[in-house]
Image 1 (tube, rainbow, N blue to C red):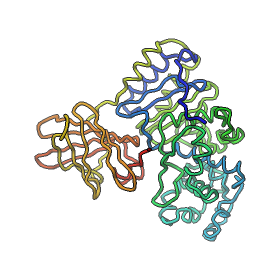
Image 2 (cartoon, helix red, strand yellow):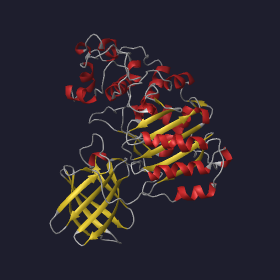
Image 3 (tube, rainbow, N blue to C red):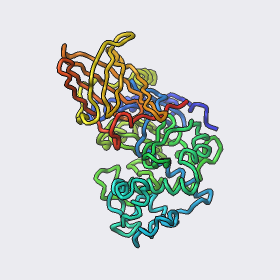
Image 4 (tube, helix red, strand yellow):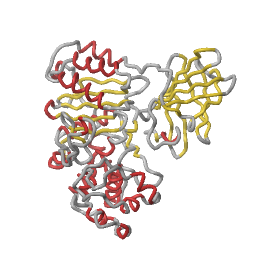
Length: 458
């Protein structure tokens, strides 16, 4: 089993330059478009560098966005190994009651086409399939006849990943997390995680999985080891090798690290391959360096972040120089800057109602209106203060907040959402009651703060 901590080592002991890791930190922190939240670097299976930008914490499980897809692919590999389905299966054969709506091309779409983003559609089908049938999105998907023959073109397609996840849950009779717990999560020492749904019982597969940075690193290390973990075969080596190859060419994508081909819910990179989530959630596997790099961040355009990895961090493997102790000290004292402003208006979601001195300690109590809910948060004075807000359905919204008064009639609160990549700046003028809320990056799919909440692990 994998419940014991990952082994730790110093960069120099594993042939890695501390100066190179520091140069990556310098480059990333100097770019205003990159907001790092955590970093974990493994070499030869050992953690050689790790850090969290306060107020983010090592034990916080966060929304990974499309990194989730690579876990769905792992469920596929396990289900195929157990003869629960085959890659060559036609999608319509798994939903015979829905099959009559499928056109001739859709009837030839296979499970493998779903996995490698080659259904023949020219764009993401998710919104169209949901509009077609919100109660059963697969019905909506089957109605969307591909523009090209399946297998012939690449299109990044959340609808394909959702349908793949739906097939797996139909064939196993379990949720994705229920199926993966004894087969993947338990061997890796990962406690039962939360995986979001679209309101029904089915976990969505394309996003919504919540894990800690180290848990993602364990997953990456499993792939780096060809599916082996402490002498146990968790995933078949042949599946790992196939899933992480360039199976679907995608030279038409606009950015270099998105033009290298796509496997089974894994992207090829200019170096190695990766699980990749929106706003800069990365699990990079670098076979030539025997390394894994996990990054969580709040980054709108992520190519510059990967550029910094290739320019500074990649050469550090096999390099030398720098002080391991100085690097460890820097990593232990990381913190987000207090920005005092966001880019995207959130007025339809969140408004501030009132601010008052904290009932205990220093700081303030901020009251927000979020849709039809009232949320009361603690805002630290010059420090982050965490509030855990129950939102119903066993979910809790974790918010870290700081407050300040730039002038006597202006209160500014910085809100960091600990369970996802996003950050909100709220400005309130108490004398008029006018408020403005702005996101640094706008969450995908969530119409309110409350819908960003997740169950806390016990």
